[in-house]
Image 1 (tube, helix red, strand yellow):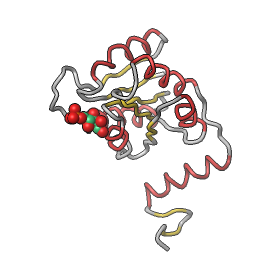
Image 2: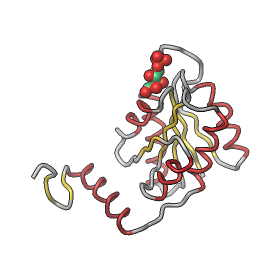
Image 3: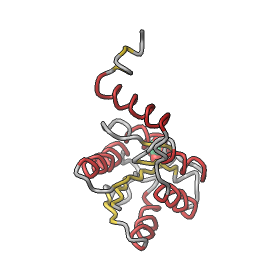
Length: 162
Ligand SMILES: O=C[C@H](O)[C@H](O)[C@H](O)COP(=O)(O)O
């Protein structure tokens, strides 16, 4: 599995441990930065680049997921979700990490590095990566609605404002 990671200054300390852990588990980690600590850096470009990496790999048939993390994980999730084809979920416990895959087929998760220990963050990532999508009809239908809205502004061919 290729795993794209992106963060900001608030998550940078987690990067090394997360990369070491995922690499030791046999994953191919692509780090989209930042490379060094700058307390004034901005998460959008790092997280959007990670999200783009996931989509490009998946479109090319490469098995890939993404992990973005920052102080809260909120801005990082918002940034990742700006990328067409990304379903980024903010996860904070075992249940939300697993449901991100089971129900949402999330291809990116976001974690608040100031909300967890690095050991907790690694566990969240492991739960997410190991969990398969359920392929249950209702979840497939809802994900398809999101994709349709993203592509056309419609859901089931109808305006969501109607
Ligand atoms: O949602 C955004 C993230 O939590 C950022 O990591 C956070 O806002 C950075 O905060 P500061 O610039 O105060 O270190």
